Structures are given as structure tokens and as C-alpha cells.
Image 1: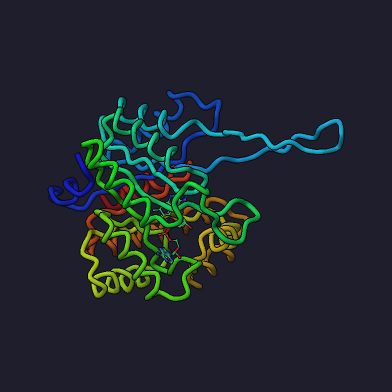
Image 2: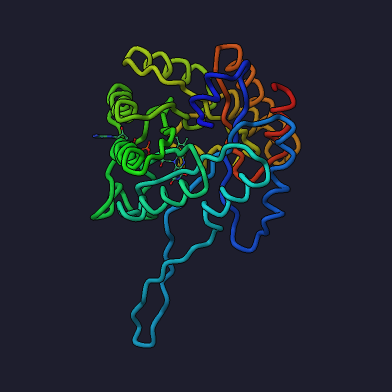
Length: 308
Ligand code: FAD
């Protein structure tokens, strides 16, 4: 079933999840057991993130280095197959332009067709560590909108109609000169065939409501699903804004810093803040709320208990 159909036919808002493929060495059972507790809340789909290749530099006897590609995580395809078989729900693999040629992306789509996956999230992906600007592969895609077009073309050619989600940024993508330009680029993705939008995490719902209004003003009519992540410790007040170019409200900063050193208090502050955001989003007509679990389940489970 497609995400578009799930949203259309759902009688009430639902939670969805995003997981990161586990590191190599984690067993299938360990992965599935980490997801199992969420089943109580019937998430209709789970997104599986994709990570570009990493490199290792090996010293040679002559003093030079050779570069070797390393894979530290279990493949997205294997994770999708395992989740799909165990829980009989929709999996949404992320497809990224970064580090991928046209041929590599086509091969990923072929794998998803083979697995009977109906949905994908089309993204550009980020720069390599140390890179200032995104560099597409010589035979690759520059923007997610080009990837959406390619997935549409694949759908026609292969007779497999993927439902396509794309990313949106309530606080603007960091490379965009302003919000209007970013929304106009978001519209290009929708015009190319994207069926819905999932947002980057945010901690102030007003940013999401303003973003949703701007999308509608720009003629973007597809569903916009807010993405949330509960904070757990004061260190994230530095790492999250740096990694995702977003603001954290002063009230949340004050609360976390004043309880730094008290792990339990910080966990509760982050969880309750996120739970409050979720409650407010549901009251303001969000069709679903997407949770970035990032390897943790206890806090997201508590938020789901409070709200769904
Ligand atoms: P795009 O939509 O291509 O936009 C990138 C930038 O280019 C924006 O500033 C945009 O305004 C601009 N732009 C777009 N089109 C044009 C144009 N035609 N002309 C000029 N400028 C243009 N990353 C991963 O590596 N793996 C993941 O699994 C992953 N999952 C994610 C899930 C969600 C829900 C979100 C929101 C992000 C995720 N990301 C992931 C991060 C994402 O890859 C980065 O934020 C990336 O920098 C931008 O991706 P995008 O698809 O939004 O890019």
C-alpha cells in the first residue's frame, strides 16, 4: 500500500518511525526486537535511512596511502526485507543522490521492486566529511528533484509505480539563500511527482505551521508530515543545531542546561517537550507524526503512549 493511500484512508492521525540501519555485527533478531515494542501503536510505515559510502585510508610501505571503501552498517535493502517480512507493514527506503551513479540508483530501485516495496523517500544526501558544497557524482543527480524525475521514469519503464516522499525544512535548508527560494525548490520536487513531504526535525511548532502555510501559498498541495526527535542530553544543544542547521527554543535550552548532569531529568525534559509538540501537532491537523528514533526507543515509546 502506498503512503498516499494510507494517509487518505486513515480515520485518525498515526505515528511513523525512522530507523538507521544497525552497525555490522548486530543480529537480525536484535534489530527486530528493538522495533517490536512500537508495534503496539500500529505504525503503518517505517523509514530506513541510507548512508553514503565511507572511506578508510591505509598506509603503504612507501609512505603513501590507498583509499578503501568501507561499509560499517548492514545494507538498507537487508533491513527493509527483514522488517517487511516480520511486521507486515510498509517500509520506506531512503534513496540518496550522494555517492550514487544513475546506474547504482536504478539497481536500488530494481531491488525494491523485487521486494515488493511500494514507497521510497527521495533525497539528495549530504556532503562528504570535510566538503563545503555538495558534489554530485559525474554520472549522478544534483538535486532531489532530478531523482524524483528519474524514479518516475523508472516507474513508467518498469511498470512499478513508487509512491515518492521528499524532505522539507521548516527552518529552511542551510544552503538556501532564503525560505521562499527553498519552498520554490521544494515545489520543484512536488511538480516532478513527489506525493508527500516529511520534514526535518524541529523543536518549535510555530516554525512548522508557518512552513506548512508557505507550502500551501506556493501551491504545494501534498500532505506535509512533521518530523520530531526528543532530545536526551545537553550535549545535543550543540550537536543537533550543527548537524541539522536548526534552532532550539531558549526555554528548552534553559531547562536542559539547568539540569545538566542529571540524566533522568534531561531525559524527562526532552521527552515531555517532544510529547507536547506531538499533542499540539495532532490538535492542529497533522495527518501523522514521524519520529526520528536514531537508535533509541524508550523516549519515543513514551511519547506514543501519551499521544496515540
Ligand atoms: P534538495 O531538495 O536537492 O535540496 C538541496 C538544496 O538545494 C536546498 O538548499 C534546495 O533549496 C536547493 N535546490 C534544490 N533544487 C534546486 C535547484 N533546481 N536549483 C538550485 N537550488 C536547488 N540524508 C542522508 O544522507 N540519508 C538519509 O537517509 C536522509 N534522510 C532524511 C530524511 C528526511 C525526512 C530529511 C528531511 C532529510 C534527510 N537526509 C538524509 C538529509 C538530506 O539528505 C540533506 O538535508 C540534504 O542536504 C538535502 O537533501 P534534499 O533531498 O532536501 O535536497
